[in-house]
Image 1 (cartoon, rainbow, N blue to C red):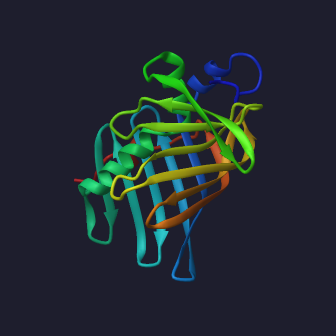
Image 2: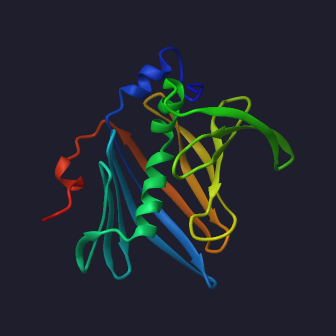
Length: 212
């Protein structure tokens, strides 16, 4: 599971990461119009996950803090509704670094599933026993070991969500996908393009705590 990390001690390298900060744009196309939303993602392992988006109507923050989910917008900071909370919980579970470490440590089980055809190539698949957001299928590049796709059930509609990872670049010895496309069976596609990714940046713990 550590083939995405260069050289020896790949898992130790992953374990050394305490925070991540990624900056980029989220691109949504609907009814022939394209909306580009500046987005910043901050992660503090193991329990903090925050997405800040500059929406047309104003800034919106979605935050997971050790099992608590809240959203801050023009109405203030409020507990996330069940659907949004479930989506955020799934994002945390599927975080690539946390997931790879969980697989390596045996905290999450996986088995080899049948290969799938993607753009004319037969690619290996891991069926990950992920609860409650699973089952999760990881489609891998057989040469690099990089995750090319994640597939999992859509929580609010029949069908399957497919996340596609591309434009992998080296960041401190780790291959990171700078392009992620999320295809929803009913809502269409959302593309996240990252401009900058940094590990072990200083993050104020207060940004993950819901304001009183």
